Length: 245
Image (cartoon, rainbow, N blue to C red; front, side, top):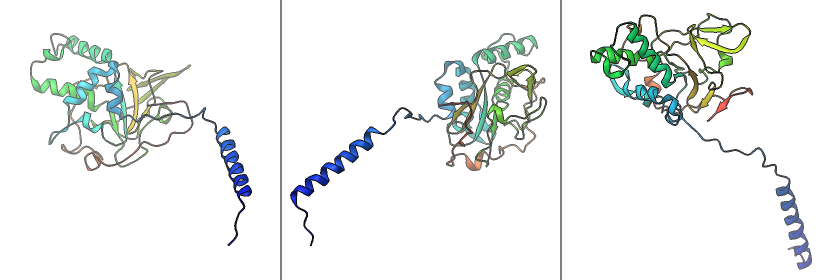
């Protein structure tokens, strides 16, 4: 058995300690960060600008045969693109309903019956969300949008309607959904663990607001219910300017 003399033991220990200290000194900690995971719902809840939208998410069922709310959907793992209207956008939408003679004043308690109230809530919520279904990378950064004005997204929204995009010549940061719903130039591409958020300044709604009649068979939103609680994560985006939570 080989025995190491005490002197050499001390020498080896000193060399090892010096090596460890040298390694520690060379570690670059400047790029360390803490990634705080947020779901789409938790992000929206923390920002007052979306409080009216969050209220609607909590009131709209994901289907006629389910008591689960859309808010629950956006708090679970999944793949969603959300065009989140601001409080101002929702209030402006209510004012257009007043102009159309559907309600006497721009207030949620002004609707003549529960059916019309539920219909309008559903219009706002279902038109604002694209569910990626079983595709783990099926959500849209702005640079994944259709390339040409007037082109539609491949995936439909929860109302089973395909949204279109419009670009403005000589204004590269100007993007509109369905011709006249502007996406914020600063509050866009907000990445969460279950999708991405784009703030919009106008509610996405059909001209005929009673058109909240999905063409799909009621009771099942495409790709949604089977994976409602499945473990899925958002994709890693290309190295472009974006916001993460």
